[in-house]
Length: 311
Image 1 (tube, rainbow, N blue to C red):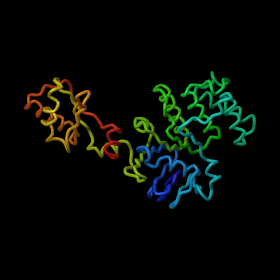
Image 2 (image 1 turned 135 degrees about the vertical axis):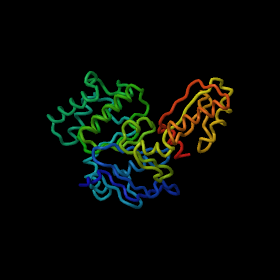
Image 3 (image 1 turned 180 degrees about the vertical axis):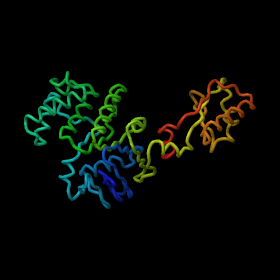
């Protein structure tokens, strides 16, 4: 039995004058999953988000959310999505509770249901103690949590998060990640754009990388990491002056030139055969008379994958 995608983008093009923002983008998002959209600034991510939220019409191709065409059925699309943009969009003169109750009534929930959902959302995002304070007194992290709570007051089945943790401190970012994970566990489908690759690594079931308006990679985090020949060897020489010599010694094992971090003097190279490559590297370094401070094998990070794909 197949499950129909909740988000469908089919061969979408969009230009602004002479600038082509999207050049034939196609993707899908499965129900109850997180699809992360990564790419450098100007890659086309926000343009795609604006199309999916009915704020823009594609020049060519089709986009649909929950089966509704984003152009022909725009009102129906807006009824099934929640959107959290890059900046908190709350009324600073209202309290957190008043913001959520107002949005509940705008969603035609009725006064009693709006009150109940507002209280539930404040508790979910850890804002109960500050519920009756004006939003202008909230910290940046509290505003982001209130903004996310506001986007969910209508309990939309689809949540679109456009760089939701930008500017947050690490503690607040972790709290927000936990809240997103709970929403997904409850069945919400999430499209996430982010500049934080560790965010995509933790939250996303699938990752799409877009650059210059085109999709250049699509898969799970592990599948994308495998594109860098799987595991990586990383070591540090005892004497930083030996870094170049050490890199040259293990160069025959690497596809391309081993990478040297200029600050830590750590050397990194792919380990396509895992432990066997690690053993060979130790032998090469021993033959070259290089003393090693530490050495290990690890999976590549999404940062390394991203830089490799968008270089």
